[in-house]
Image (tube, rainbow, N blue to C red; front, side, top):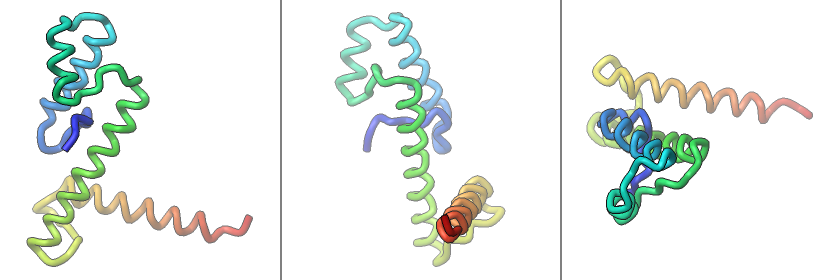
Length: 110
């Protein structure tokens, strides 16, 4: 595990909001030294830029979705989520679309 919590963590949106708020408080110098030490002690990086945070956040959310899809595949024997998992179905569709676009782009002669 890690402390790169996405702003929009599907499994726990309140946690993503809270972590983002702690980083904002740190940047505004509104966190006490003891809270900073405590958060850094568990591995939360407070001093990363917003751009870095959102990239890490995106990566963590992607990893969570991948894990969710892997669990879905283990339980159901396929990777085609449906109405029972609409957000996972949307994410999976988006990944397929991005893959097709990348394939089309890579086959275009320069």
